[in-house]
Length: 165
Image 1: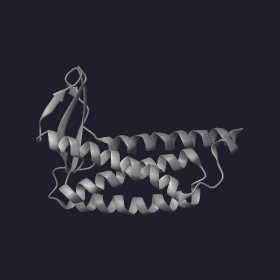
Image 2 (image 1 turned 90 degrees about the vertical axis):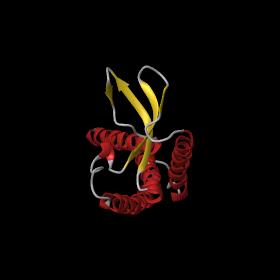
Image 3 (image 1 turned 120 degrees about the vertical axis):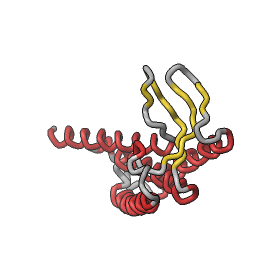
Image 4 (image 1 turned 60 degrees about the vertical axis):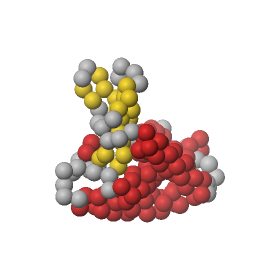
């Protein structure tokens, strides 16, 4: 158990990780918006394109066809989640894997909220495909959220394993 904990890590360290995610996410989105018009794409490999897509919904364009209320709904959910995550980071900041996961999720959520507030949609640009099937386009923020979720699952599996031994 000691291998997964440090002395109480300061909150600022985890917030810096989240800030790095936000900065990298917004930087890449500025590059895409300045270089591509909506729908433009550049083929990079046989399975990967860079494309400019606007997502007014949530993950996998969930509720993208709604009347616009989803913009503020998802912004509110992300705002509430950010508050909960900061509270969790304050109380569990010494658990490295757990706190790293939360910091990645926080940074990703804030990155996408900035888009929702600023543009009314999230800018997605990473497009993976195979055999004519395209995975929904995503961005750096989405990647950070996904990596954070994977780290949360790994943290829980390791916690259960430690509890059994």
